Length: 109
Length: 114
Figure (cartoon, rainbow over the protein chains, first blue to last red):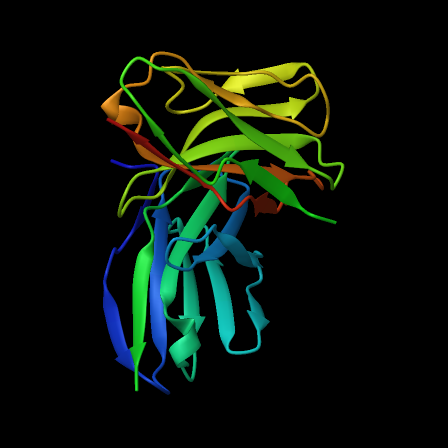
């Protein structure tokens, strides 16, 4: 079993749709959690950190469920510009992130 | 700030050749990382460093070497290039704030080994 697993998709949704991604992790000692966005042939960029209480940034909401060992990312009112690959990252120790393989989202007009 | 810079952007190597991928950051980050990303896959950690003079292996270190003589630079050395090392290589850095460090990535180096 991989340490961090994501549904690879692809997710194809119309503009304005709400879409959710999950990411499961196997190490219960994991401490920090992140969502990164990666555009085609570009480097990953931090989208948002995931806090225990959940957090929201505009149309994006991240949640952490420690009991079930997963994090989620919800995107509301999808825009064409949201089309990208979304990577989750999990840190057990400071300095080492384990990344999922990414979930590809395509938002269509 | 330039952030994280990588050179070259693209390189073709013949089997058995060697090369050094350069990475530099100007954010005074103590942590630096090298990842490889194969097509359609996530990031695999090759090596990382928690400060000048300190390096450690990641998930896929075989065939690579690193050094960290300064805070700013973290070069990755490929000896005896093999087709399996064809990939996109990303360097990243972070400033650890407790355990919630955010990684900043360079633009990547695309390597093709023929």
